Each structure stands twice: as structure tokens, then as C-alpha cells.
Amino acid sequence: MKRFNSGLATSEVERAIVSLLKADLIAVLAKRGFLPRYAFPLDVVELVTKEDRYAESDVELSRDRGLAIAEYAPGAQVIARKTLYTSGGLAFSSRREMPEPEW
Image (cartoon, rainbow, N blue to C red; front, side, top):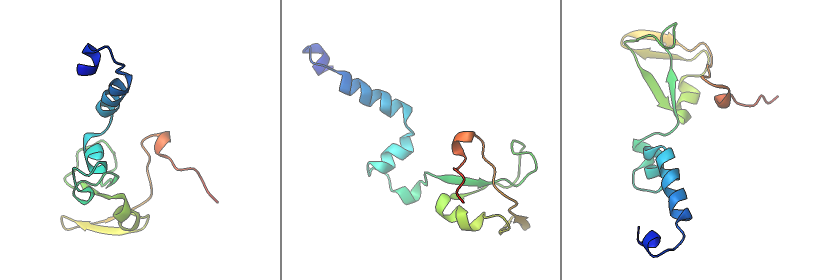
């Protein structure tokens, strides 16, 4: 407001405000060092435990991406609430999430 009232350019400030409003608050705070990253994992992967991805389930399994690579790999098994779940593959909710194929 001080810059605006004195007639100085505010475009940098406006860009910063817009950027913060669009960003994920937890991610920004962790990146800037205000929150510990280990307490708030930013890249979380869910193991879907029901046939319909959007149906209610009594088990919610999610891990940080680093752990999920091993624990949720196709064929891996996880026990939750006295039930054994076997990972059957990968699912992507959008094309943007899909990795580029590498051979």
C-alpha cells in the first residue's frame, strides 16, 4: 500500500500476491523453511483399496512418494485393518500426471 500511495510500481508485489494465492500453502511454507518437510509430505500417493476409485472405503492408505515407490509397486502387499491388499498397477487421474514412456 505504501508503494501504491507513493506512486511506485507495484507489479512485482501484485505478482507475488497472485503467486501465493495460487500456490499450495503447505508446500510454500515447507519450501521457505517455515514448516518441516518431513511432517507435511508434499508428494503423496494413495493406494486405492476399492474397485471404484471414488467410492467410500473403510481404509485410506497414502504414503510419501519416496515410500510409495517400494510399498505400492505392482505386486507389493500391504496389510491394513487385518486385510491383505495387493497392488495391481498404476492409475493416473489426469494426462498431466502421466510420466513420459522411456525404453
